[in-house]
Length: 155
Image 1 (cartoon, rainbow, N blue to C red):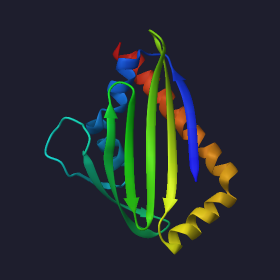
Image 2 (tube, one colour; image 1 turned 135 degrees about the horizontal axis):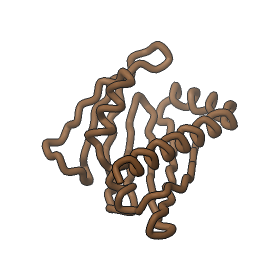
Image 3 (cartoon, rainbow, N blue to C red; image 1 turned 90 degrees about the vertical axis):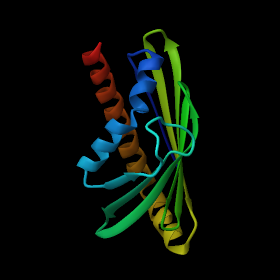
């Protein structure tokens, strides 16, 4: 099952990539939402193989996920692989310069169930695909606006 969203941001490509790859800030934001997050590699510099372990509650159950940065091509792309209880997800983030001061960011998430329970969950998601797609695109738009505002304030 796939979800995609594309947004344009009024900021240069290099600045946008620097913000979306500022993992320390993103980690703090995720932890404020109640997720226990541990970075598993030693370095501060992001790169292929950077891995996080997350513990969180979803639908009343404690869940775990391992997120690994599998592709890192500054300033154009990042790909993350997430594995959690029989469900694998690949998240691809592509950035394209539309002009010196405008950047298009595209996010695509591909969910692959690996167990029967994960297949049932994905199947139920397919039934609500319209609502989930709308929510995904709204969240992407909110993130793009927040990112744009943050970049304008720092300029």
